[in-house]
Image (cartoon, rainbow, N blue to C red; front, top):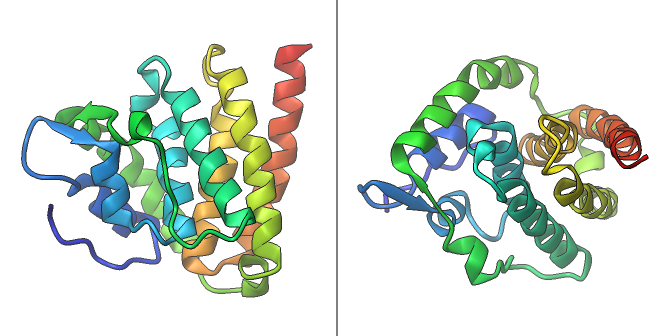
Length: 196
């Protein structure tokens, strides 16, 4: 596996994701998670959020698997775990390296815009006890992803909120966390519209 670099922005995280795993045609979710660090709540949230926002989400079942991953990660934070565990069926899922690199390239223009916005501010919103409110909200958002998986594009709203929470924690940007809470409310509205 290539060496990871510690980063506090989206472009650096995409660099790490793109470099995940050994050279080969396939990259496992486990390789990506090992690259971002399994003790880091922000990056661990960011990865499934980015997966749903990227072209990889066109693979059937990816949204549901991402929802399960977020549910487990956020749930483990709520009960005080320091290392995040994910089941083997998620860790073993693979994506073609070419598809992964294409997805990363598709996200880079947005990453450059996001990175200009991110900066440490209102950082109390990204630390305890507020981090538990973030985790609880992510649990709710994770439960919506399987419901929205079969309706094209509807999962983008909760995935955007999850991604924003991950970025807020990485960059200690409480303003982005506040925006993610607003996006979370919009997600619940989308779910209500789809179900009803």
